[in-house]
Length: 204
Image (tube, rainbow, N blue to C red; front, side):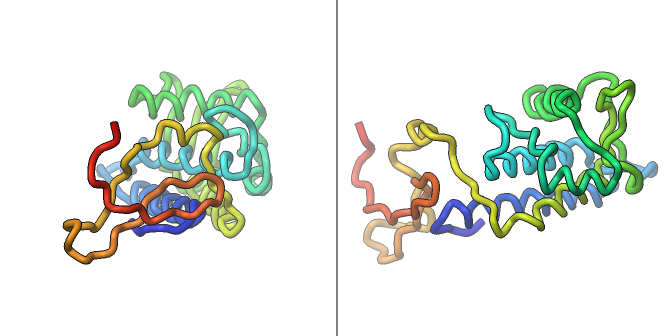
């Protein structure tokens, strides 16, 4: 976790960390049957995909998994012979992403598997009922590798209104220590991170 001067630097490190954590989950084995840490891996991969959707300004609302219908995801899925429609995206949001994030569950009747080969998604009567997690990991990783140089992370307008009035100052031991004050995040859409003055009291 480094200090960053721009949102792009901060966002890129977070995405790289998420992918590294997802890779660890996919490669870990928790039983003799070859099971992986599929639930956290899936949550991370869907979060990365969601963040890419926000960075590319694809779709609207809080969840941007519709980016899976757009390049580079659509091109990567097309190479596998797959194409997602609006119903499939809704399945991913409701049965996997939201269920994992908000309830610590996935919908009954869907499955995460540790298969390393095959298509990333499986369907039952045009419902997206299976994610082959290692295969999906490679789709997300390849998508990120292809766009990270142009990735433009940003906050939605108005989000800064709820930020801390006195952000954390990292690495400062005391006001008189002579150690440079750490920089902190108070940026939106490309603004830089200012170095704050030492806070003498909490804001009223």
